[in-house]
Amino acid sequence: MSSHTYEANKFQTKDFVICGILMALTTIMTMLVQIPVVGAHGYVNMGDTVVLFSGLYLGKKHGGIIGGVGSALADLILGYAIYAPVTLVAKGLEGFLCGLIAEKVSGKKGNVIGTIIGGIVMVSGYFIGEIFMYGIQTSLAAVPANSLQATFGIVTSILIYTAVKHSLDKSRI
Image 1 (cartoon, rainbow, N blue to C red):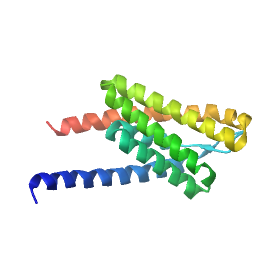
Image 2: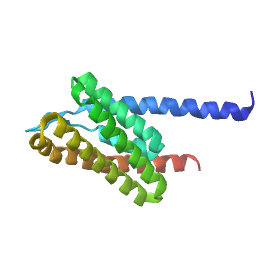
Image 3: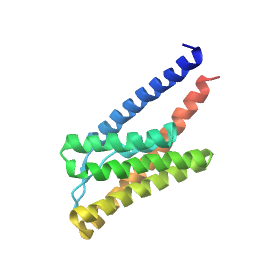
């Protein structure tokens, strides 16, 4: 076995482990703080911070998987199984698009645009999904809370990503 093959496998294993850790962290952050939404059936949580951070840090593919699976797992554990399919899609797209845009648009601008688009897609995904589940009135009632959750995730994910990136840059000196 050549050293090149070993390095490629080592990278894949590291990737797999980091994804697992961030998926678990997404689940935990989603479960840690649950603020019920008045007039709707869901709750506000802090999972978007990890979903958006994952998109920024690991890119579109991993951001999508971490966002969708980690968040849907929290719904299943917390007894919100009805939301799991909507969450899988909405949060998966949130992480995927955040990572895609951050990859395509370089620098801080890409990070900001990526997280904002990811947040908008998450809010829109729940809005559309909840129309089919509960009707337009209940879906509309959840938009402000989902928007607040997205805004919190945007700000905190950029702060954490910037700190982690800065820390990694210093460690290479």
